[in-house]
Length: 581
Image (cartoon, rainbow, N blue to C red; front, side):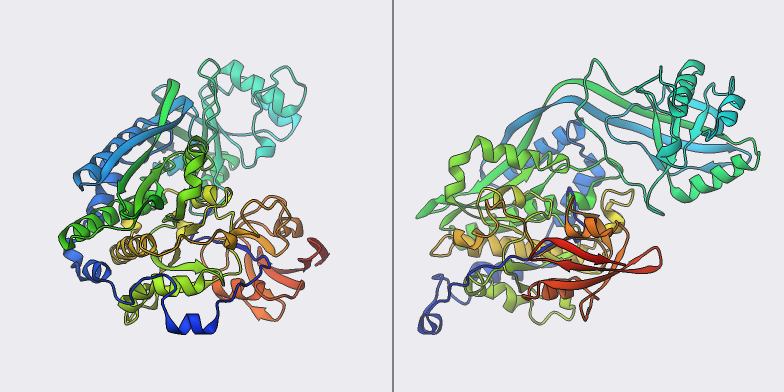
């Protein structure tokens, strides 16, 4: 996903609660759904051995691999997914082009080593849509100069050199080779003497984060090799070099550009409805990934659960001889990692569909199990009935994370960073499954560890059953989900005063921040840990949701930054930082 871990954007806006008459709640079903459901029962009766979700994930992440938007792997994956839907017997299985990318990008090989004064295999990556090396390139490690004297001392020593830049402050600059700034002159010297590339440390200890800028021109491609090295390895090599050792580095990075336009696709398939067939329930996730690993959890997990939910639901209803009332559409969007491009483009191309979509259910939070769904006060009585059989089937699980529940919220939150957000912004009810479990998504998200080895099969099996059953139940409600639950979030442009403005990763660790949000303005940084709001100590993400849902508008927020406790007084009503310490 673009900006989440088991991540939640914590925002709470005040809304009017519409209360149904008590006698209506007690005397009759609100949704027309029975308390028990033969389809849900049959889905939960499927043995673990008969679920293929891990096989599907293995084919995708190990067989095809990473799926960067514009890559050949992504095109292969889209065709593979369409063939799966067709083999499962779904109707109208198809690829729909949503746009093009100006330049295609593919990786074939990335190996590197320190060859002197000792041998060490290096863990590194490069940004997508940047150049590799011209074969194997060996050369000395040179620390970037910080003074005029150091720059002069490097004259004639930069041929095939790998420049060690501990921060961007010392990185050679290449966009103004005629400039007089030290970085500009160092860049000009690097080019003139034929340097090899720049090596920088990753910002997070133990992790390599993948990113990249796709808006490039085939006639003016990036020319300079930039390598991000595991922080611990960089520190070791940097110190060896500073101490005067003859450090030699060797990299062989095969990365190719393809002239565009490169067509990009979403994958769609459907189980047709009956009396309400013109209405749609969408189930899905994004099929693209970054390409620093295998894309197993972001979002191979969501892709595989979407495909397997489609298979078992189609098989189950065929065996029972039933059909959903609404059409259930399974969608795999691409271009999500570059800004929800596939889902946004699809909505723009099919604006009339927005009026007939009842719900969009998105799985994009990694391997942790789909353990709940967010419910506003207006949705809660409907969802108690719709998800009642799922809650009943999971209630006795020894592992609490495998027990499905409704998660009360004041409004459906936007800004989580996945494809349901595209629908929320045009007023369509979009849901990002709540996910719980022992997996640390921050450790996985956009890092070198996004592999199938980190996926928990038990969670995947549970999620498939939830997704298939949830889609079936929502598709059979008497009514579409109400749009007035979005009144405070759908198209409103007013500031979200009750938003802290953080994306959380593992526990209460801040993984990212909303640009211009209260947290960023208070000085909270990625990697900081939230400790307390007011008198409430924050131990889990539900604690944060709870404290933000009350009506108190001024609170002292306490967080840990580099081992030091920091505080700030927030005024949510006025969207201000009153005091920092």
